Length: 539
Image 1: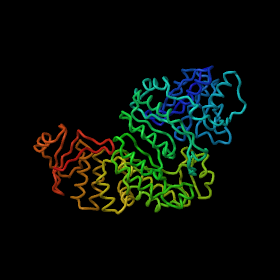
Image 2: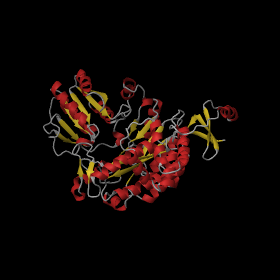
Image 3: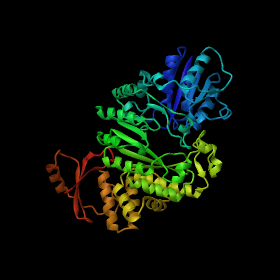
Image 4: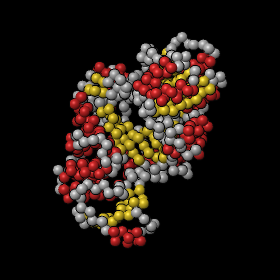
């Protein structure tokens, strides 16, 4: 029997882990089948995906379903049903794990709900004996301890990098699951639907990391829902990662308020770029946090974020969610201000998604939620935010992403936020109105010009030119200065600067800044891996 597991990832750089976990388990526990994995993305042509599956002539095709690929999965599976009518189509994953029946997926023979390894292997074993289970909706039994699951990092997994679109493991994000489950019960999150946390033994984690590094991994993302929930384990893992001889970056999702002084001191000693943190703040409104059952010491979380960013050795990404209960535009704006004030490298403004199976979706009427009925089920309005409010925040989100998260406008934005507008939200909100009608994909020069024109309407144009020029030269070696900003490049001083500085730098620029009367040297041979800034020396 031939079984084909199909990954429809968001991008080729994001290698979905689920099919490899299923394959590894079946390879060990189901001897009567040949399991292969095909990898595609949601951006690939549907006909090409179907043709690739058809050419394998599989007996069974399995799809892992998520909010970001379910529409594509449905179209691919529906075509497969017509061109491979005898093939058994199986769906699994979080997007199909909370259906009351299988009626929403008429093209599927079976829908597995819950952790898939054991249930899928049992189904394949049954089918291999020419039996067809009558119940098309399969509730997965409790998964064995994580340590009892075989590693997905097999020879076939590593070969797939060379055979795939990205050609090398060094070009892709490698997902790693060292624990499953979450100790918290936030009502908007699918993790709240599972009880407890199961952890891999540290020895297994260390061995897996060694294997991934030996194969050339350059970025490993732990998919643990709250990596630092177990403090002792976190210390052991980070201590091990700090001691590694590698340039690999390790990415973790963490709760900022759970960092104590020992953990922070440990992180402070990490080699630059060794770790990066994604921190879900989600809301800072007390009534909201209480309603969504999110236990967080907000003041400590913000203080710890400021401490992490002050180290200068790790990238920090912070999330807020618009549309949670009791959160108005005004309270959300206060959250934006507080988060920007502690200077994370990125602030993602997300919008609440009413995920299947979550408590917040089941109780949506209590807060007047209206949301899209199709994945990703994003909020349209509730009792606290109108659709007009959501549209306004969408515009703010776009400006934050382009002009804050890119990092290349850092000094201009910081001055505007702290010295002109008195807060981040007021600046981004006003700038979003100014940018209305502009194309989404701005060239660097166009983006700097937009910000320059906006700042000139609020501060002395000479001061606006000073900050824009400083950002342009700090973050780009190319000429992206807006037209009209004076250039005072000193090429003679550049020759002297090259001779006087050790180590020797070949790519430098010396520029006089009229506003503050200083001459600065910009070293384009030396770039920070954390904020992507080039070295700047005041001469």
